[in-house]
Amino acid sequence: MPWLAVPFSDLETKRSLNRRFDIEGIPSLIVLQPNIKEGTAIRDGVDLIYRYGIQAYPFTEERLQELLEKERDKHKNQTLKDLLANRERDFLLGHSTLKVPVSSLTGKTVGLFFSAQWCLPGVKFTPKLVSIYGKIKQELAVKGDEHFEIVFVSSDCDQTTFDSYFQTMPWLALPLGDLAIKDLAKYFDIRGIPSLVILGPDGKTVTKQGRNLVNLYQENAYPFTEARIGLLERLVDEEAQNLPKSVNHTGHRHELVLVSEGNGGGPFICCDCDEQGSGWAYQCIECGYEVHTKCV
Ligand SMILES: [Zn+2]
Ligand SMILES: [Zn+2]
Figure (cartoon, protein in one colour):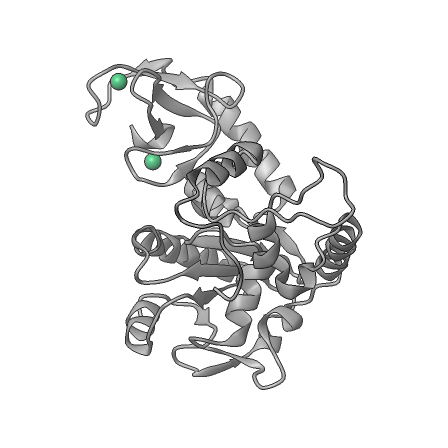
């Protein structure tokens, strides 16, 4: 580190700083400013640096407001080409056709699949997404519609693992190590992988919850729009009326009780399939055991 430090032996100061700024986890970066009154310190320095880099300086309210507005404008005006192509590259990697023009995706619903082979949940989720991708494509093909595609955005460390992982996917990919990859992760504020961001036919973001929606609704989630998801939610609520109020599940020794979003439930990780869930679930509240209704 090229900066200063509180001496390691000065426990007193470390403790009092921890207390004063309520430090709950590290790394944490508190930014104090000259001539600014108590209590207005910027507390999410790490996050700001991650999102804006040196642009975040001098971390003032005005500066942050300005950056937020810029970001909002960028999202409002985003196009597929801006997101996926750059000056040196106007194509994506395919399988039978090695270079697929980015422009061929214009007007399609596009999923950006952030994953890597070192990420176990990613590797587990991929075959599920492959099967759902196939079903969506098949359903669309019947109508003569080809307006869906997925693009793999890889965080793999080397070409060999990228190649072997991409081999399992029937869709397109950004080249490994491409500059767009870091930019996209930052732009969509990707905190964990696997993650599936859905772009609409106009190139605008439809949802960043693609993974969750695929887990909940499988191929029915397509085209992932608010209207579609609203409809599915209503259907699920209706179906849930006919579900048993409690069940016995082989994976757990206690009886599980049906819960919903406003009624004891909430976002959870399914103890059966290890995937995210929300809304209706079967739960053992004492043990914190929770599963999708389809997983019992
Ligand atoms: Zn499950
Ligand atoms: Zn239990």
